[in-house]
Length: 234
Length: 232
Image (cartoon, rainbow over the protein chains, first blue to last red):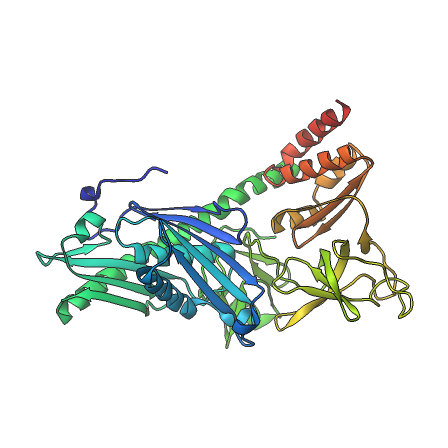
């Protein structure tokens, strides 16, 4: 995959380039390799599958989420990220569709070059969509920082995060743009928070549009061959 | 079948169906659900429509979700009381009663062992209970169902299974011209084939798996090369 490695070229109020590849893995029910700039993750979903009795719930499915760092075992930092992804997915998943079952999500970090939280969330959403798991809505997550000069930088690269004064991650749903997740770090004023939120909200529309075109391309590519077959048949 | 390429996303309201539903009955298939008076999507994919009033969302899902009346291939996993446990690739393991076979009585039980493959119909499928299978029709005859002895069993995508079972699919007819064979296709993405020799069976299974990527136009080419391979 060709990774753009020039963060200078991306404007401060623009998202880095997004790319995705569907079903790179063969044994799961749906998987996606997703990258935002140079940050790359692979997400895979399994479900609905059999659930252990201790986690069994009769009115909804159990959601399992695992996050694996690039090297080594998951530590506290990864556990927090995992919990954040699970919290958002629990809000978006239509769990009553498959009671007494388990939905399992695995996220493997391949490269962390900034906004890994948002990237993990977005890849989780795409994996759910491609795996055909029932969702109430899709969602998009955006990361934004305020640097030492007080500038807002949307979807920063790792080099830019070295000079952050405050960092924010927001997740919005696709229906009414409701907030699903807020993570903040550092010091900021309420006015700044509101500015960053509206900036992220407008960027989330771009991500949702990316989901739609990616899935549309995936379906068209496969059905194109089929329609030409039908024409040949007649 | 109307195949427009308009993609719907989860949570989207589908007003076209709501309009139609005012005049006649509509059937909501996979990926669509009713939320009070609105119709809402729960999966991503193109919206499909079949006359008179069936709507569903197409997607290349890999996990089988049982539905009543489906023909499936299952592997016997074990015995539990007066039932066999059968793996059909769904979330739950399915069950089939000893009495759901042709001419089976309490004394005369069918002889099935773990690892055997059966072709069965889904009798009962609900989200809340495990699926139940039968190997007889309503007259107590087995028809094409039951134990599949010998042969070769392999898994494929759900899409290929559905494609081959479609009425106008020319693939199986084209293969018949090359060699005689028996086949059982399950909508759960499992296929069992049997030809006269092991060599022919393997060639056949490879040909079927290649068909997924191929278009209808390439089917003849695959069949020709299958013939060449077998004569060599």
